[in-house]
Length: 230
Length: 294
Image (cartoon, each protein chain N blue to C red):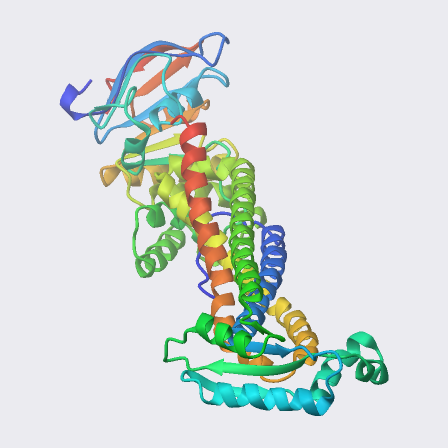
C-alpha cells in the first residue's frame, strides 16, 4: 500500500446495489497508488465491471466513499465530473465505439472534448494509430474492422489524451492469446511512461504472467489484495 | 455544405429539415400576403387622406347647364379660398365610367340623376379650417355634401391595425410552434443517442459540448430548411402579386416595394434558425440535467 497522499484511487467501505437487487459490491476498501499497475480479477459476474464503473464515475456507490485523484467523488456535483473524467482513460469490454464515426474521429473524441486544436488532432491521432498498427484504417468505420482492430481502436481512444489513470475492462476478452499478449505489452509500455493502470480480467492465468499486484473479486467482496508485487 | 462542422452524433435525417421548410414556406406566404395587403392599404390611405370630395346633388328640375353653372360657382369659391391646392371637377363621363361596372349599363347610368363630384386637395403645409370651409360652402350651396373620407380612413386605419395584430399573432404562433417542435425533436434525439451521450460524458464531455453539437445541427437545419421554404414560396408570391397587380394597375410594384419586402422576409429563416438553435441548446441542458445523474 502507498501513502494516502499519493493514492490515485481510494475506496472506503464501498457497497453497490442496483435498486432492490442484492448487493453487487460489499464493503470494498482498497487504494491504488499513482503510477502503479494492478489487475482486478474475478469470474464473470463477480462485480469487476461495476467496480470499474464506480471508478470511471458512471455510477455512484450505495454506501461508503470513493476518492479519485484526492477528491471524494461520492458527493461531488455533476458539473465537476468532466474535469476528473478527462484524467481517465477507459477501455470498455464491448469497446463502445461510435459506429457512425471513422477510426480517426473515434480516437480523436477525447482530444476534441479537451479542446485540442484540430491541426494537432490531425497530427497526433494518425501517429498513434500508426503505432498500434491501424494506420491503414484511418477512415474506416468500426463495423468494417475485426475484433482485434476494434480493441486497438478502443485502447487508442483511451490513451490518446495521456490519461493519469487507465481502466481496461476485459481488454483481451475478444482477441486471441497472441493479440492479448501484445495488448498487455502495450499497457506495460504506457505504465512505463507513468500511467496508472487497472486491468479487469477474468483470465487469471494471463494476469499471473505479469509481476503486478492483483485484486480478486468474488461474490462482491474483495478477497485477495496482492500488493506485495511491484 | 455551408458551415459544416464535425459532429459526434449521427445526422438527424431530413424530417426536421422538411418540417422547417414547410413551416417557413407557409409563414413566408402568410407574412408576404399580409405585407402586400398593408402596402395596398397604405397606398389607399395615401391616395385618399388629405383629400375631400364634394358631391353636388342635382336639384330636381335643374338642367345640366344649371348644374354646370353651380359647379363653376363652387370652383370659383374654392379657387379663391386660401389653403386649397387643387380643385378638380370630375366630368359626367368619368362618373359614368366609374359606375358602369356596378350598374352594368352605360345607358342606365346616364338616365340616373347622379351627383357631380369635385376632388379637392388642400395644401399639406397649411392648417386648413375644414369645418369653416364646409359651413361656408353649405351656406352658399345647400345642395352639396362634403366628404373628407374620415369614416373611410378610420376603417382603413382600423383594418391596418388588425392586419398588424394578425401578423404579430401569426409570427408568435409560428415561433411557438417551432419551439414546441424543436423541444420534442431534441428530446427524441437525446433519447435515441443516449448511449453516445453516455460515452461522451465518460470521456469527459461537459453538457455544453453535447448541447453545442445538437444546437449547431438545429441551426443548420433552420438555415437550410428556412432558405428552402423561402425559395419555394417565392414563385407562389410572384403569382399572387401578379394576380393582385392586374386589377390594381398603376404603380403597384412600386407600392409593393419588393426589395424592402425581401429584406423583411429574409429575417424569417434567420429568425427560425436562431430560435431553433437556442431552443435546442436549452432543451439539451434541461434534459441532461434532469435525466443524467452522474
